[in-house]
Image 1 (cartoon, rainbow, N blue to C red):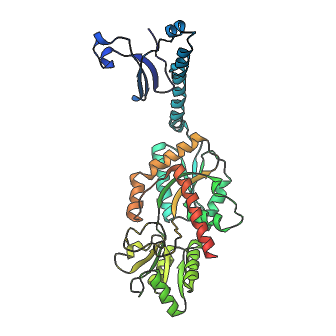
Image 2 (cartoon, one colour):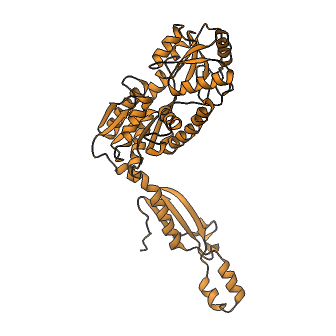
Image 3 (tube, rainbow, N blue to C red):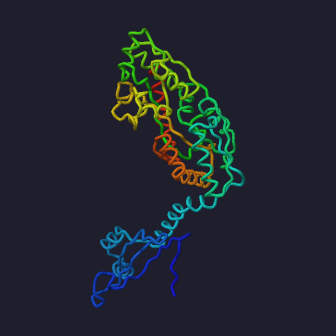
Length: 394
């Protein structure tokens, strides 16, 4: 019995002789037999082509001196089954490799997930839920640590020095490292110092004001500031400072940046009427339905989900989008199978019920994992956007 050739794994590639009925005609009218070349991978038919054998031998022998026939034969596209079989086998092996390798890789010890911020914040909450899910579903030992400072850059500096063996992963928010690279001539790391694994969600950095203030957008704030000879505005750090500088420069007004330790302090300052406006990432949301706070502008490319009628900063004449995104990364140079396994583990955790609940219910955001390639692209695009903002602020 003829054995059908096999490809690695669960794939099968083979030529078969078709039954006359499968050729689409009665057996009596079948004439010359037809064959099919089929590729089956994991039970799914990927390629199916039928053909008739070309009687090269007889044609060649009887017409070897007929130059016309030789030209005709040399121009024909003859199927070389062995070559095609070998090529398809190789292709299927490559396609199957990431999944097989990802399933095979397991960490040789505890995987340390270092959060780039202090305990209790949004990044810490997401990171601990992700780690718990991976530990539960994968059986890996996950150790969560906090290393705050520099909007996540302190953690990333330390992460960059670790071995790319899959045992060290970090979580932070994209704005910190992108701004660090975009604003400084020399930095301890570059954007390509890491292998990006996943994103969890993207937030909305917004400029908020107290609900009873006489202005409702950037133009109103600018007009109010001109009457007052300048006003104080709480800032979330370098991105807020740059935006205030650009608005002040373009509008000819003094919006003085007031540094805060975080969103909670910024919201408190705005609610107390101590500043004209302030930047925040999420603490303001519970005050929007009550009217205690209002959104003057959203810094991201899309409008705020709870203030859809309020134009973005870009729509109000300042084309410098700033969008914080929570992400996970490891030191650059991970082996392909290690990277694939980590990315798959994070993806499963990010879309788990516990993580979705905290992101959608508490933070009122949407879970969105861009994967390794998408996260890398996000950093490159974000760098270009912030570089434009830096140039405009000079």
